[in-house]
Amino acid sequence: MSEIQPSDPTRITADQVLSGAKIRGARVRRSVRLGTYTQRAGVTLAVGVGSVAALITLSIVVKFLWSLPVPPHFDAQMSEDQLNRLLSAQKQSSDILVTTMVNFFESIIFKVFMPVFTLILGYIFGTQRSSDHDGRNDD
Image (cartoon, rainbow, N blue to C red; front, side, top):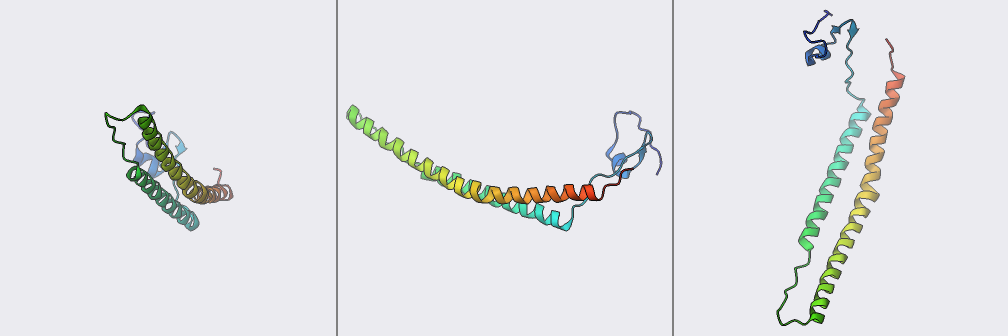
């Protein structure tokens, strides 16, 4: 390969990096490799699991917003006790809905999808690190 001297020593073009040209005596190696079949399948699976988790999260948020209790109608003739009971019932209804949605989110996302997603990513990066150590060529 030919030796390319950049006009500005602090700037290297992408073509110089990707071509593997010698720059100032040091050979630039390609560090981007296509992963193994298992790693590519794991990445595809992780993308799928992450997408399903995102869709479930979005559906939980939409259901929550759709299920919010209607604000109460205040009447000028209501007594203070009636207003307090009405506001208390409204707060209790909102609290029940929030608690239900948070529990549903935790049971689906945190207890099912996050462990699977973490397991997949751990396997991908573990096999990548293992293959990096096994096939290492120190020049």
